Length: 293
Image (cartoon, rainbow, N blue to C red; front, side):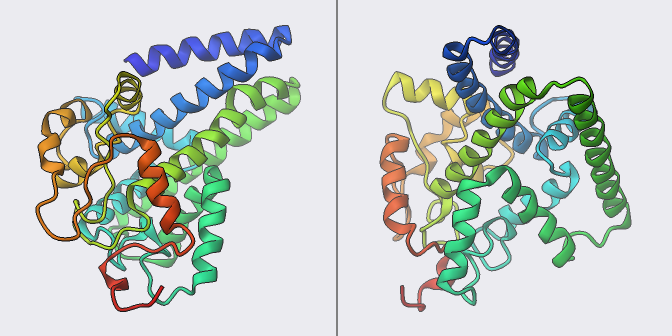
């Protein structure tokens, strides 16, 4: 509710500032909207676990609507994200492809990282649609496949109508500032956060394949709240059934217990620095242990 109220107020103010031509206000509001859209992508993730809304149908409806705006099928994402939890950082983890595949050459992994970190709004849908069309595992159920095709049809119809209206009524300024620019930035924020969480780590368990952030400042804690406590990502992998608002009560689970476990970081800055050291050779998982860097 907190994120939603701030987001809707931001969008209204942003629409007014665009209409008035107040660029000095439009730019900071668009940046705030991008952060909140990033939070909505995390809400999409929460919905895939059935933990965004208590009512299942409302939960799934929210997931489908957010998926349409993100060019993603909610059902397809749910299936593949469950696989991500089951096969974390192994070669079967499609969310972390190609960084879990030891057969992928360094140049191929670097190209994938470049496009995902700079064109996340388009690369993430490509990643999941690729898994749907190339890897049939998890999509053998005909009912599931039919639902995914229906959601794809909804995405096509929605964006066809939306772009027709934008062109017909010349709504380009609002399209760019209220949706595309914030969504483009949010897509990249999502990708960078995903990389901070997993890329460059050499384990296959929640503590050894995940970077978590336990904020040490009030600003960091506030950011964590607006991101539905996604920085406590390791807890989510240990206890996937916990709703986001309960995650801060289990920070003791993040303390290393085995060799190779990742110690929690105090802020995104230090976790980001750790990622940058590993990013030139993007890889994830224990399967890389005998492969030279």
